[in-house]
Amino acid sequence: MEELRDWDGKRLQEREQAIRHTSLELAGQCIALLLNTLSQAPLAQQQAHKRTESSRGFGS
Image 1 (cartoon, rainbow, N blue to C red):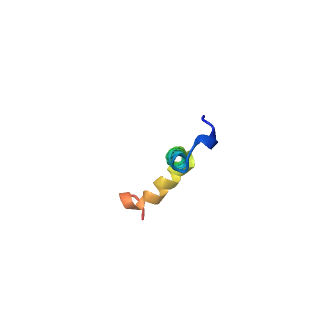
Image 2: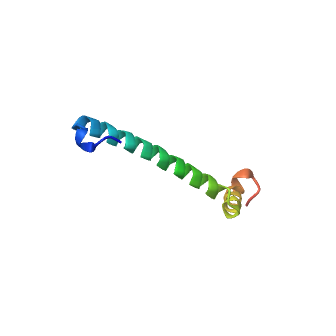
Image 3: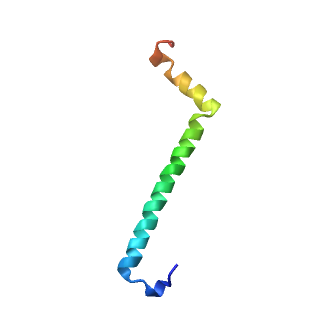
């Protein structure tokens, strides 16, 4: 990486925006992985099945 003193304000702002954009992408991917993992957990599957029984015509 170049020396920061050689960077002007515009260049620093562009770099900051690129870092922010990448951070948001990674955060979104982490959330997607977490939701996927949680949705595959046996307890989550049981709860989903239980909560949707009536909408499938099997419940009371």
